[in-house]
Image (tube, one colour):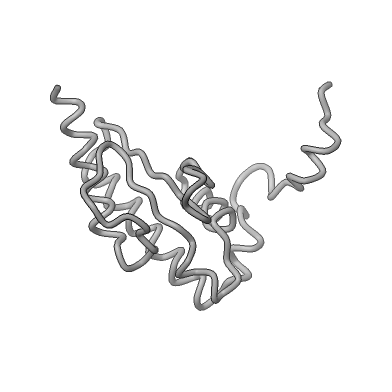
Length: 134
């Protein structure tokens, strides 16, 4: 029960801190996850995929994207119950920085990730011509 309560608390904390930075399609109490969209970043030609790839440069694993399907450009954030407040605050600050970069330097997001071992993959080619052998 305690773990569930912490997961819900963490999701609500993230939702409240990112509201206004990212579009919140359903502004109501959340459970263990919160869903945003890329609607506020669209004027800068920045997509959900661009933002989560950039999040990798900040050292975070990208969250679930484009789900649920009823939310265009969805970013579903599901913090675990074990995350510290410091880690959650760093995650929030990173997403706020990415939102600023989307406005001021969208090319950073289009080229992300830059600090990972592998750069951005051509996902269309990978899906159409999968390399199934090492």
